[in-house]
Amino acid sequence: MATVTDVITQFRSGGYYPQATAAQGRVEFDRAFQAVMNAIEIRNDEAVITVTANQATYDLPVSTYKTFSAYWETSSNPGDWFPLESTSTDYLDAQSKGWRMIQSVSQPYNYYISSGTNGNTAKPTFGLYPAPSVTSSGGYPRVRLYVKSYATLADGDSIPTNLPNYMCILYKMCQYWAVANDPNKKDYWEAVYKNELNEALSFVQNQQQDEAAITIVSPFTRLMSRVR
Image 1 (cartoon, one colour):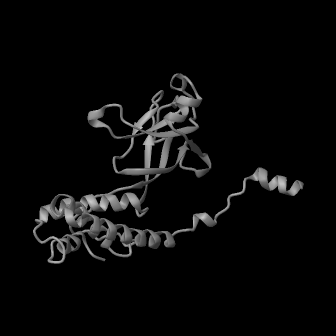
Image 2 (tube, helix red, strand yellow; image 1 turned 90 degrees about the horizontal axis):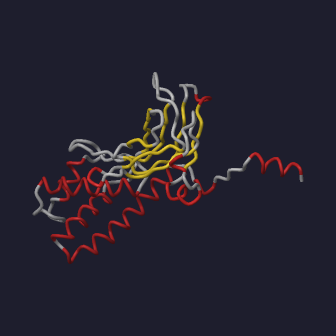
Image 3 (cartoon, one colour; image 1 turned 60 degrees about the vertical axis):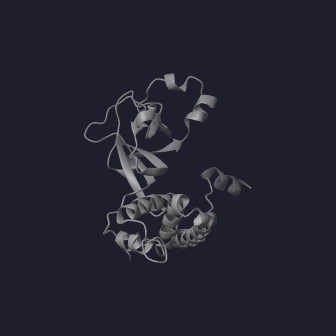
């Protein structure tokens, strides 16, 4: 598979933007790669957060784009893991007045994703509701998150192999460059980028389980179907 250097070299070739320096190509690659990573689920990851008694919010890795699910773990035994329900501060403000004043409990039952309160150092935060009443000791209890994340690639790193090729990254680089340096071609690069991105997205989705084909039936529904 092509490397980061290969993509930057092609970006700086005659068919694209040879006037760009290697350093400028590197900047455009990082911007473009982050945009593609955000659009396509090609890097899933986990994050583990240890907790502090009476503390509701914790820092998330800044590379986290999306949190899919969260579990409250009291030991390494999966039988002791409790799935947390997703919520939001907007929902809690509307539906649970005074929720920020609720006393801590031994096992939270909701989680939410928000941002830091300091505008100068704002970053994604993870919140538990209610706040835990215990502090992690020996690594437990803790929260395990399943997330989509972003990683910066080094010059010699390969483009992720679950992308069919690197063209969507290259075209996004061209689009970003054209905004300031070649405005007459900005719309063209945006159009070819979107077309290539859709093809890459379809390719990645076909590698994964078709979620639309999955039907999850609750135990209550199954029970009622038997009663009829």
